[in-house]
Amino acid sequence: MTDPAPVNPSPPATPCEQMIAEVNKYTDWNAHIMQAIARAENGTCDPTRHNETASETHRRADGSVICVGSYGALQVGCLHYSATDDRNDLATNIKIAHQLWQNRQKWGNGYEAWTMFTNGRYKANL
Image (cartoon, rainbow, N blue to C red; front, side, top):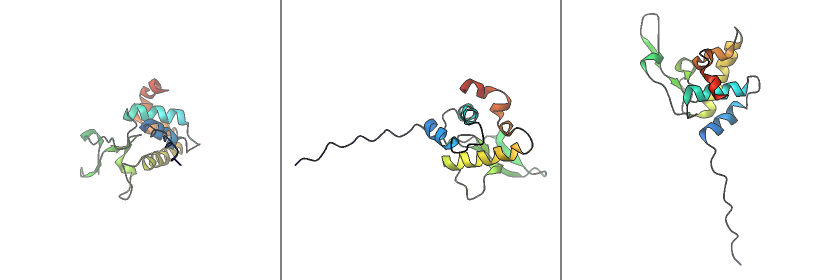
């Protein structure tokens, strides 16, 4: 008796496919807009791609640095992460982005939390 041929597993999803799956878990925002924002903000949908440049430095009123960076697939600012959040984890990136979006919805348009939405560059990814 011979062993059956191995089943070829599906190839791992691309980072953007993984990001789309995470974004789609939240049904109260427009997933197409969020996917387009992610592609415009991050380019590769890579949750470990962070922007830790001077332009992303958040300071207190006295000028001292609070934190530096925007993180992950949706480039959410460091102010929105707690010390225990894994900024390299895609599910965490999207969860925090969704929380930010919800908070911004209370005062207007939640999508305006992202520069690529307000400047219209996300539209190239719709």
